[in-house]
Image (cartoon, rainbow, N blue to C red):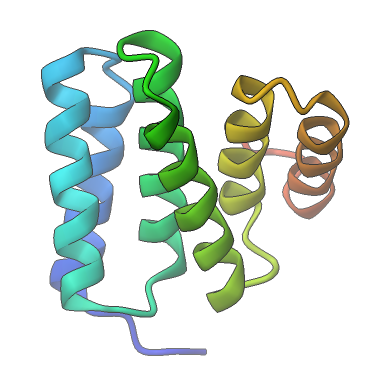
Length: 123
């Protein structure tokens, strides 16, 4: 097991709460909280996955800027770099691929997310 920074964990939990409210300003605040979690713990895979999901959601619901999907991909993959078994990172990657209309890659990432954690509502 690894040591988790308690403040980073708290930032990640609060960020997810704001992320799931699906409000543009709250989503942008979630991004700041995920970034703070990563600043506190640069290897925090869950925060990278959350950041990936947040940018894909920002693109999907509010701002169709291609750069958001690039960031989503980057952060989702970074989350997988730090924890290749993190279903949330695969789910975030799937959302990014889906929004890029890369259906096969989205399906593959979704299936991996479900395989890793069949009980997760994110996958």
